[in-house]
Image (cartoon, rainbow, N blue to C red; front, side, top):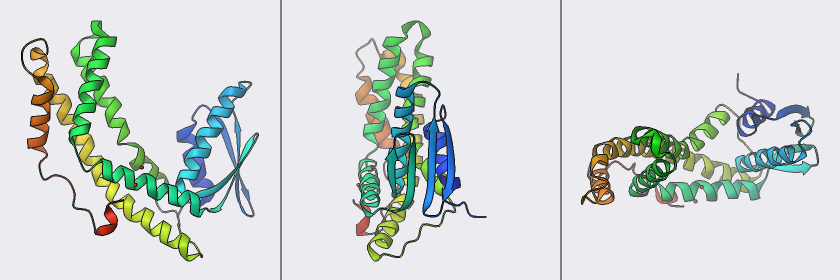
Length: 229
């Protein structure tokens, strides 16, 4: 059975604000999300804001109130933002080198912060940190799987279609960049003994990544492929 609006909203709330109690109530015009985090008002505000931002990123019209959110029909403004965000992500992921550089920077940061832990721990922590960037859209799309995204208005139909086209492009790119992360971590493990020597670790890493992943980028599906995160 395909999930309904309440089920999808509940999934998103559980991911975005796992520390909160989010009760989803079905209304005639959508759903209401009641958010509670105990006596900590600041924590409740933060959780509510995080949930609000993520629900709007789906493309829904979301009205915030002090203790609840009202989720209703599609919003052309929010759908346009989703398209812009996805387009930016697809464009950014047309190059694998910046991911390798991000892994190197994260390894160096973790190693400096936890020098006693050793390089292996720094490599593992950096790999997990950068890989998490490329888990966000696959998780978001998994939450929407099977959900009926249709609309009556023509402009909304076009935005939904464009969003789903970009989603099909972003998924293989996320897989590719997670592979780049794993490869970079392994390559840096080989290069670690040379970090204090004359070898330019960054240059060696980027050379290896560039050679290994040459031609790996998926081919965009048509002129609409170049567009917005």
